[in-house]
Length: 116
Image 1 (cartoon, rainbow, N blue to C red):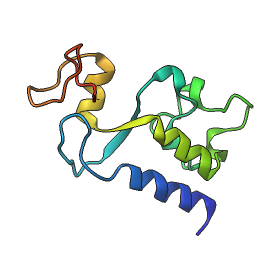
Image 2 (cartoon, one colour):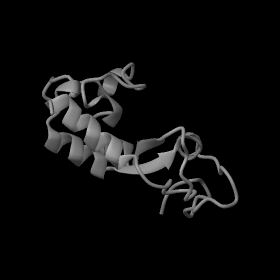
Image 3 (cartoon, rainbow, N blue to C red):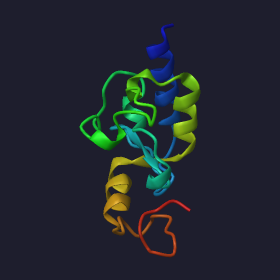
Image 4 (cartoon, rainbow, N blue to C red):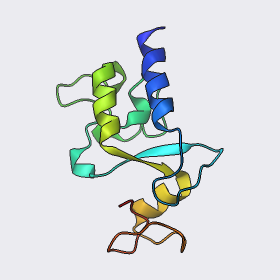
């Protein structure tokens, strides 16, 4: 297995299971959403070197040392995943917008779809 394949497998495994907000599993896939945007080093989706939907977000295309996020080590991928919630795309969108998705959501004090 190549390093890229190993990192891709770790990322895919982290996305397995139900949404940590609504509790549902969605066949369209799950997202890894950072719990604290200030602690975010990189977009997990781009850390296997295969691009990702957030590669256009310039702030998170390189590590603080200047390396491209695609050059992440396995340890760096695992550390970044630890900073994330597993969310369905709907809850991820709602959380980023600060809106309540649905009545079944596990809500925090702000009544948004933010995992507790």
